[in-house]
Length: 305
Ligand SMILES: *[C@@H]1O[C@H](CO)[C@@H](O)[C@H](O)[C@H]1NC(C)=O
Ligand SMILES: *[C@@H]1O[C@H](CO)[C@@H](O)[C@H](O)[C@H]1NC(C)=O
Image (cartoon, rainbow, N blue to C red; front, side):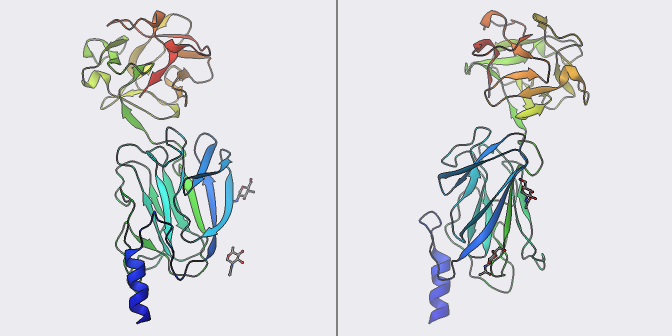
């Protein structure tokens, strides 16, 4: 009777309703932050602590402690828009939000051999990664001698320590997106006339769903690249107040293309004090963007996704 009861319990445990299982114990988790900023750690919907960039936090918690995630980079305290790590007994797994992922995450059992599908390190760096759930699982397979089918993972050793890492790639996940002036969703950053060539002005225009308005960037240090092309937002070699922005062939480590997309939605030239700016805040079609000294509370310098 007992094995049947156990497997029934495991199979039917709803994860969000504080799972309780006969084998639940306390174990060690070490949470690392490799994101390009300090991040807040949340566990089971509650704020735990702020982890500095490059830092870590050690927790001793139950084997079914609920989801581990961060609200950094437009994630939320309620876990919407986040990638999250879950644990139940010796199962571990990742859940992503299919519409938005704020920060990649990895989970690795420490000091346990990865053998026959058991105990592998798992990692998810984009919203469509293959080895993650898109909804929290409500049922778990019965533990057996065969490793469970991903995205379920299992490490069947007692008292395993887990390393959980935010941003294992060192950056926030790239966004492919339109960029709007200060939350005005019907206006977009646009390449004038869709002429993809060195020197074409970058302007504001009605959003129209064309490739001339589709950009790839990350939070933190980033290029601002026109998706599917090798052209980047470029500030020229002498950025100053009033200098018009353009696209130019992308280069690595070119100061004119090294931007920093801040968490408060400014696109600033890295270490230069100049921001991407909408002249006079004028959202009329064809107004060319410029560099301007970054100033606090300047709505002309806010670019939202
Ligand atoms: C955690 O961070 C401290 C420094 O704050 C470092 O000395 C230690 O090695 C780190 N531990 C792990 C497990 O990474
Ligand atoms: C479990 O592992 C932790 C960390 O290695 C250790 O501090 C603790 O004593 C262990 N508990 C048991 C019951 O072995």
